[in-house]
Image (cartoon, rainbow, N blue to C red; front, side, top):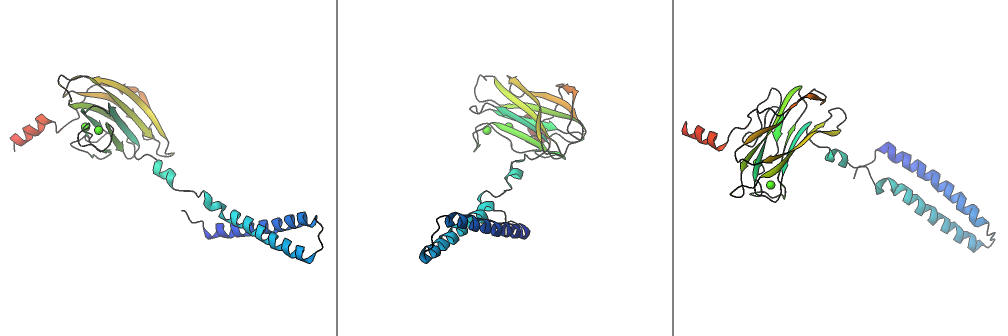
Amino acid sequence: MVKPKLQTLVNIINFNLLIIMINYFFWRKLLENFNSTDEGDIVFRDVILLALTGFISMVILLLPFVNPPTEEESATTPPGNVIVELFWDDKRDVDIDLWVQAPDDIPVGYSNKGGLFFNLLRDDLGIYKDNSPVNYEVSYSRGISNGTYIANLHLYREDTSPFKPIIAEMLVSVVDPDTDKRKQILKTSKKLEVIGEEITVFQFKLDRKGNLDKNSINNNYVMLRSGNKDAEEFAIDNE
Ligand SMILES: [Ca+2]
Ligand SMILES: [Ca+2]
């Protein structure tokens, strides 16, 4: 619960006293209409009046705490400024890898989860060793560099033999650094059929504000992945 500042509390109490007075005179005027002259009735009336005004003032005093402002809004603000997401069928134990590269940075993917600007949150292996029910990878950048971004996917491991083609969906979003508003700028689906194949899904240019240069969008292939099985074996053999 967020504590109100002292000044706010003083304002509430002042306001509350005003309400007590208004209430008291309102109800008193109302009850006077009964025109009772009996002393016992007057005492009873005053007690009731005090109890009533006390109750109303308690309610008013507690109102600011019924639905206090929380810091939830900031918790729902997505992290990062350039967000590249990859989705594939949750029910299939297929491992697909997302690879991204920011301008003037190294490729970021499962074997290199952090660069200067991008970070891969997690390498989703399909259903294998996954506590979540989803097949999903996401990379975030902090801040937006001016220049060309590349987003690839790599079909790493199959679930069945022969392999049944699978659809992967890629989304690119930008969070405006000034307003924190998130906007999806690119979206597409790809049918993947060849195990081990890496494709470039998007190349695109952004300025520092996250504005997309629509003329820059293409999918000319640039290899980003490293640490693939062949490369690992090659590295081990040559040690
Ligand atoms: Ca993966
Ligand atoms: Ca998964």
